[in-house]
Image (cartoon, rainbow, N blue to C red):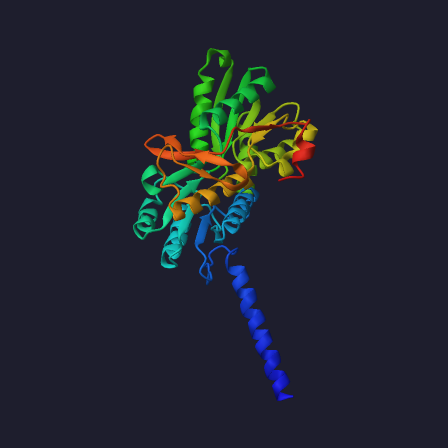
Amino acid sequence: MKKVLTSFLTVLLAASMLAACSQTASQPGSSGGDAGGKKRFAIIFKNTGNPYGEKQMEGFKIAIEETGGEAILKAPDQPTAEAQIQMIEELISQKVDAIAVVANDPDALQPALKKAMDAGIKVLSLDSAVNTQSRLVHINQADPERIGRVQVQAAAEMIGSKGEIAVLSATSQATNQNLWIEWMKKELEDPKYKDMKLVKVAYGDDLRDKSVSETEALLKSYPDLKAIIAPTTVGIAAAGKVLTDKGLKDKVKLTGLGLPSEMAEYIESGVSPWMYLWNPVDVGYLSGYAADALVKGTITGKVGEKFTAGKLGEKEIIADGDGTQIMLGDPFKFDPANIGEWKQVY
């Protein structure tokens, strides 16, 4: 009986250790654990509870596992630079091979990321960039100018190029949204938009409740508002719910960047006649392959270098101001004709 009990406890202990190890790569704030000789690649998203971010991390994990590495997925509870800095410091102490970060602030992460690079860790950003001194290369979803201009063009078409419009963005420090908004403003300088007026840029901090509150505040402050542009998946879904609940689909139009699975009901109902996005799984997937290429030395982050990114094929590094970037592709339009198909995908 004693022998049987001892064997049972041994098996139970082994099973518990295996379960604990299997969870470490997917829990925010956890370490990568023993990689068994595998290279370790970490990704830090803006915050937990964000479906877009979950899809990006999923794509990153797929790519890293395809290349034979171990993925460490991290995200703080709140979208702050301070929380990301703490995670970067933890990853440095764990001596990971690469860190990919979706920045909550373009500059605040620089000391921690420079420390990581000085320790031999390959650093890249994706989606929301850090400054060029803080990374080797950036993974961009699409041309920022195209993204910004096309959203204004969409809103103009929806309201006949007349009336007040507002932008519901993520955080005020989000580099990607801020760049897109600058291009929106440049597009609005065209004389053909002389009867349109941007009355407010609001920030929902990529938090659903705050995005709902900001949408309600916009509607209250600007009773003649004709359109809302939300270049954030959290914001556009929150605005869609508010406009639906208030029965305003015929008064205020909505467009921006959203997940098909979250926005299907609003596109099908006409609250948002159409919107745009790219596949966030592919953004993370491309980042995973870029991180692997950096660690293997296939690329260093210089203009003109090329590598193969799995199912996405060959990619080339191009200029990005005084830094470099890798472009995923053009924004894709989702409307009533195709939303039924895409809502099943992501």
